Image 1 (cartoon, rainbow, N blue to C red):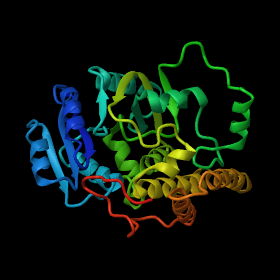
Image 2: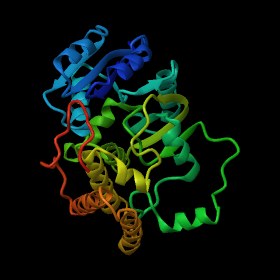
Image 3: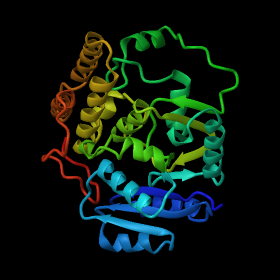
Image 4: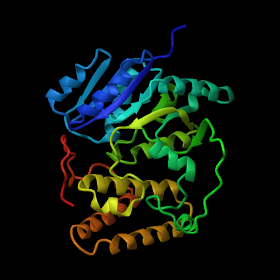
Length: 331
């Protein structure tokens, strides 16, 4: 019996060839990776040719403009399935998996499947800056706003933190996961569908992973399946007040705040008054930090973004054209 076919899927944009090339040195030599679908999200033709020339394993799928991560990952997953994938392994273009990461993910899935439906289980590699805080502090609290919850804030002020197990579990069940490092069986993709293109970019992976759980699937982080991030996130440390206000790219700030607010309001809120309290405190903190330009203008944009998300007004916003070669935009 032949081994199941693993197809990796990566989205790249702008001029990120250097990081993609570094990642390729870990992905391409892996015999378990049959193909690597790389979605060129509005990149220049010359760069697309460079990407395609890296190896014969690569299937290049080019989008004429930068459509955002949600449409691009949806397209990449479809291409992978069309090429006969039994497994789809999602990786960002700056995710550097350790040599044994894929094998450990597959092995973990086999172990976890002994007590459950193998077609309903997804496993994810361990990324320290994302999963470290998640495993330490627990899942995002219900009725929180952009990661802020007044109860948790007060607990941290009092330095009260839940007791941690002396030996962390090898597999940790989670309710949310990023695209980067996520390994999905084909049958699970058939059950939950593709990423929602209305999100454009940011929090589309949050909604997608939440959808997996809502439709009966299970998500596990595998601690020994290590993945390093070559580039820092613009919002390192979720919920950073100043990061939202100071990010040079307005599209990032707008889509990030809009989509996170959509998820918090439509999927995570159990007590609407508590959510509104958390939002009011966060808005007040933003306002206090935004007494001068350009933060004052950014605060107004963030306020509009939050209201759009809560009002389910998703899709591309005509004010923001995602650049193929990202450059700082006006606040």
